[in-house]
Length: 106
Image 1 (tube, helix red, strand yellow):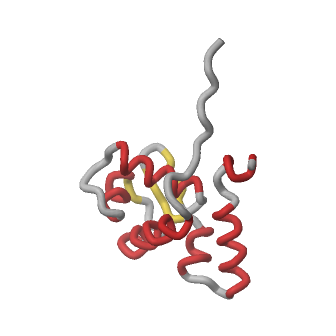
Image 2 (cartoon, helix red, strand yellow):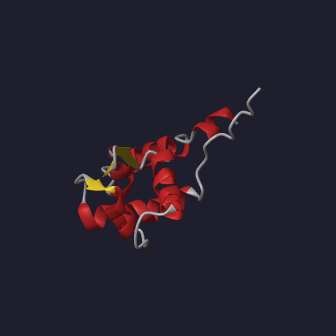
């Protein structure tokens, strides 16, 4: 019988992810960019295991969408970065915090 895989989880806290998605937003707004460009915006020189973990963490928190090598800042991240109201920002933060499946299982 095959061993079950460990569940996916974010590699750093919500606040650090918010700083990173803000860096991506400042550089390219909500434009679709490739994963390598996103990695460069958060401080990596190219794609690597470490940069993949960062992008996966941003995806866990619903801060970005990643599809076939393309990345885009989500509306959830936008409600936090440029909130319309305090209630909207709080709601988006709750959505982000509940994003990782492992947090929902706990």
